[in-house]
Length: 116
Length: 114
View 1 (spheres, rainbow over the protein chains, first blue to last red):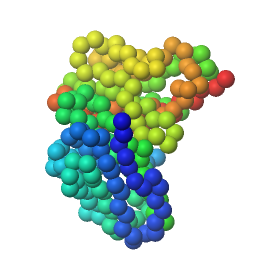
View 2 (cartoon, rainbow over the protein chains, first blue to last red):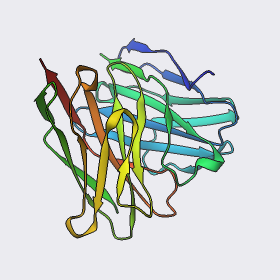
View 3 (cartoon, helix red, strand yellow):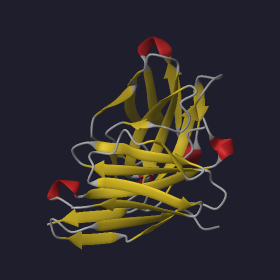
View 4 (cartoon, rainbow over the protein chains, first blue to last red):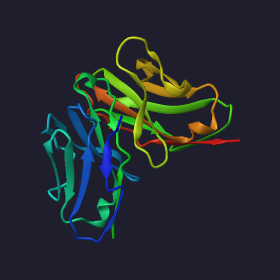
């Protein structure tokens, strides 16, 4: 069975450029999460969706960040314009409805973003 | 708001020795607690969890953790370390009813030496 699929795995871009990270959750999972991992701040929840609807975006750092989930099998996290401090590993995770309150998130392998 | 503190960003043990990774939590309501493991260049995977019931919980790969309310702790242990246990370990917390909205600790890198 395919797990959570993220692309690209690595992205190097220059300050000011737009960055789009993509995620395909596990089929049948109703919840999708975007996390950011940095050395300084660890893992931070940016936003999560339930049935394609954003439920909590309080972790989104600023207006430069936006996330969408146009359908159950696809989500994007966009940064425009990007800044060097956005350099991090961005993880997408999903969980099923029946898994709510179990804490079991299924993580992708992450997208490592470097902004020069 | 809930939070977790992991004591020691790096822990080194010899193969065959006891593994002890420390986690303390802060929560205004009874928490759900979790340990996740991250192998190099991979995403996190759930190791074990405490929600309700028995305070000693067992997970995969021989790991276990004990919920101690009086100490607000949820330390992770394994009696005998194996080289394959080398990874980063994250403690996480959520409020009961908070679903899978987890707050993670800063992680502990476990090194296993021969």
